[in-house]
Length: 234
Image 1 (cartoon, rainbow, N blue to C red):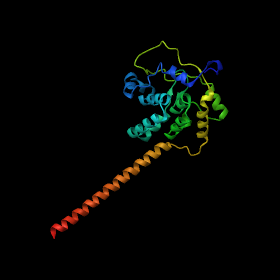
Image 2: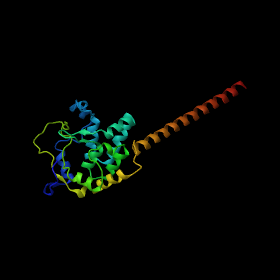
Image 3: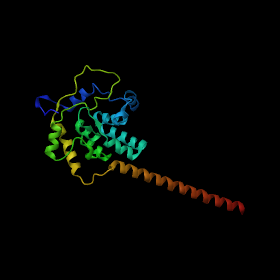
Image 4: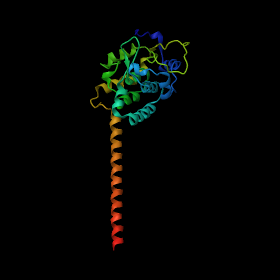
């Protein structure tokens, strides 16, 4: 990829606006499956596309809600695969994981934290964190590009728009860079992510409480039966 040229800098908002010429961010999972029937050929599912579209265009709360639903539907192992499976970029060695996507397409440190909390492992990313200077240079020298261009992400084909292109204004990514660097040095980042562990523990407690309440009700019913039976016999 070309080195950064300051006269070609665009804002993140401008880059996202250009990307929306090719991506309908409101497509449902069903739509994505229907218009991309061969995702399995590249080892992907519609959920991979759906998640990264949400990372780019939606809020951390929206992404958090989707991932909690995914955990409920598919379990922690499938979720771990989703969080660390990269989308291959044609004609390159890059595979853009959800954490890469959040790094390239958001300036929200909470979105970065959310990726770790749901189990992203930085060892599987294409945008690696080595040290402050190298990481910032890597990001600065990675211009905006549509890493989803090989997929159909609109209901119609439209080739009248120019490709997404432009260099980053690095001040916009200050929070993302700092968050990635801090998390890379944090010793308590573990997998599956904190969010997954907390939710699973909460559900186990709820199940235990339900079982305890059920046992209590059963015991009460048994006691009532014995009392009533004794009254009848007497």
